[in-house]
Image (tube, rainbow, N blue to C red; front, side):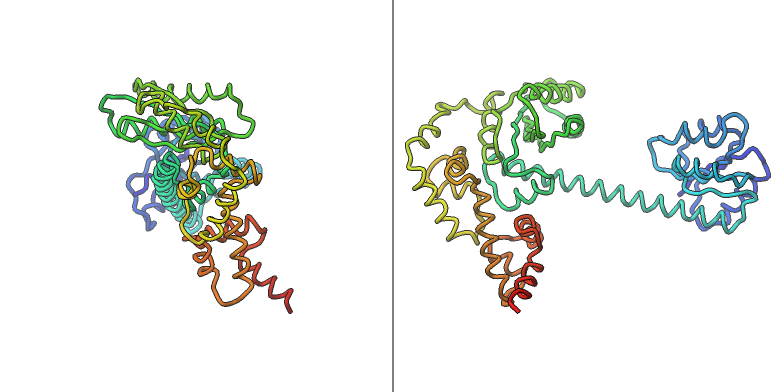
Length: 406
């Protein structure tokens, strides 16, 4: 149902427009009338009309000046201006302010109803779009919590990389994990409000965050923007503390060490939990470093490559590769990069792409089949990854190869 406000200093004009509105097919809840600009501002902010028919020339504030005062009202509405003067400058300014239409008096019924229905249609479309955006946001938040859990436990696979890629977060992203703990019983809505406020505040600094509550612990995986310094970490800690304090939630906050790529997030997560007493401190945090110093790096990298080369079509995670290598996944990627100048996941992706190129040179399999054959459960992600690596889509690659062979 629609609330419609008619603002005109001429009673006959208001009566005529009210008559037209009642003859429309719209479901009308209320028609509100105003005769001057000051009254328009008050009633708009008080009653929240959906559609506003606004005369430009009125006593007090003009229609344009009134619109200036309420145009940023925090709810969706549409404005249609009307005037007895066909002045281009009036129309230009009205549309620049965000008006939907500009009508010249005497307003004809057909013209008015067309504008009115158009306003209603746009409002309906925007409402549906807003609902869809909210559903998408909720879905991404829900997925983000699952991705956070995988990152925090080192289970890095295709789904994790795909999700991070949609957020513009590369494998080599730097950041840190922050945890906050409160032993009290906290309302679930209050928890969500606190996380939303903290994420919004951090977004002002171009900081991307994955967050979740699990029991009494809030976790934030924070990805630093380019050029972020160690000093700026204090800003993040302050934003997190302030967000909880604003909701009157006194929590103990801590953080883990800075990670250099997403393979090190699990270590930062465990350190953040240890800093708030959620788990015990590590007995020997340098043990893995010593282990790497004592292994034959080239031999280890050779074994990792051979494992990937013979298992690329499987659902591989960094956890699985680390287990096969026989030592900590915290430093596995660092060892591999020291000897190859690339990450393990980069090598896995390139192995899959090279195999896909071989298969694409023949017409025996579809792109969807090939994506599954090289280890991708999601064909769309395979296409995105292939295009990022080769600069063209899989289908175009196949077409170009066939053209070159003729």
